[in-house]
Length: 351
Image 1 (spheres, rainbow, N blue to C red):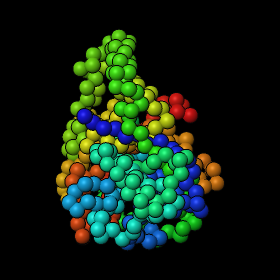
Image 2 (cartoon, helix red, strand yellow):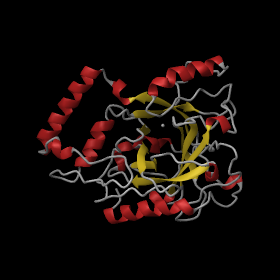
Image 3 (tube, rainbow, N blue to C red):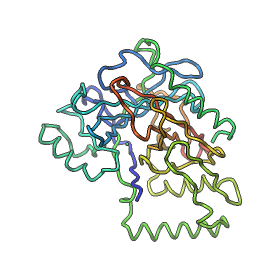
């Protein structure tokens, strides 16, 4: 059974009060790199060359041998209209025993994992408490369409970013910084009791089938997470079937700002490009898999440190990462990954 975790905004992250690290799940602020850091360097926009703002940081370790610390950073341009080429995804990773920075022992809430081993969260919290990790009750625990011809091009433009470095040195004051918030997490299946959820889902499905004249079988997409997999368009009597499915799915929790389901299925907001191919990992050549996506509710939270508005709008940002989460001693601490940006078919709905 696919486990989907929802990320929710959970209060301001005041850098004067909390010490964030690479295990902190957060919106905005400055990225917390694993050492050695790409010192004083900022990712650049592939379209205009401007330094990108740090949008989201998600700690999502992988349970391989040895276990690895692993963090995803998403960056976006605040000056260009949102598209795949104006975003960058950077995976930061290190084996736990050789990680250069330890988790903070005071102030910052303990991080929870966005992986499929959600049952380990409780053990991790106890270890944090025993080691002196402070925590307040008010802090909910942290842990993870453009036209078709343009969309395909955008995906490949994002792939082209693999060969770029993190950018030239950029004076700190010239790098846009967004207001920072903690991210808390809830499992989607917990929003309703199992029986209530099943009844509610069947009721919604029946109503939708009657209204749209489409059966449940027609609504099944081939939305696998593996790299190179094709994504087929949903068939219905009108062009809004995918958007309707998206809205129905998020109705359980409209305030969700991200969805995490490594090797799960992406939730498209509009029809994906026909025969959409997810590019192979630029580091090891292996398949990529879907891992997480940003949601429309996040847009209204993206503001500058002084509450100024920023021009970052999207319907959803789909993130695909190496299925093997490849890393070697020669990889350094960061690896470029891929994102696919779909614009919101009706942005006004989320204002």
